[in-house]
Image: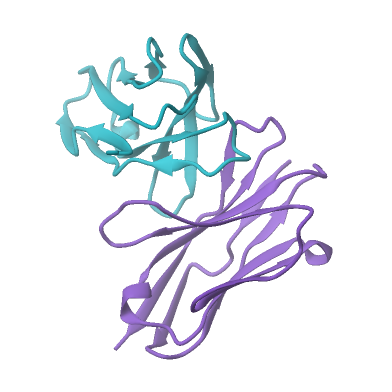
Length: 114
Length: 114
């Protein structure tokens, strides 16, 4: 069965600290995609990144970076020099084998204190 | 482009009432889907459509109906509302069809069933 686990329910850090959000997934598919979405307090879902299973290169976008490791089935997300505006719930998701459904983790609530 | 729009933003129903949640997109996306988000859980797929006239069930379809008469619109009908359907509902679209592509989400509809 496919599954996404975000073990950290809530993380609280002080502004400017670095923080890593963990995502572990399970799948038997050899081709799949992983996603991160952000849900700020306003409630909308904002796409952050999509990564396919054949590309294990780490990606950096400004203060955001992602570490994809197939050996450990993990796709972790790091925010460097966190800011209060980063406060949100972050979801990791996996495309399922039928390719018509995303399997979502339960989300990690990130609180950045000023 | 407005992207994905949903109406209403908030709705209160009594048990047994029926209603339709509206979803529209102006990006000419073939794939549209409905998710529900419950506290402490990731999003769960209710129904999806890969094109006009084609719909299929997701993970939690019971109590909901959908139809897709046009590419733009994908309404979700609650036949007889129950308190267990209290949730936040998100509509999403993507092109080409499937979860391998980035899905774009509407702002959500918050539903309370009393």
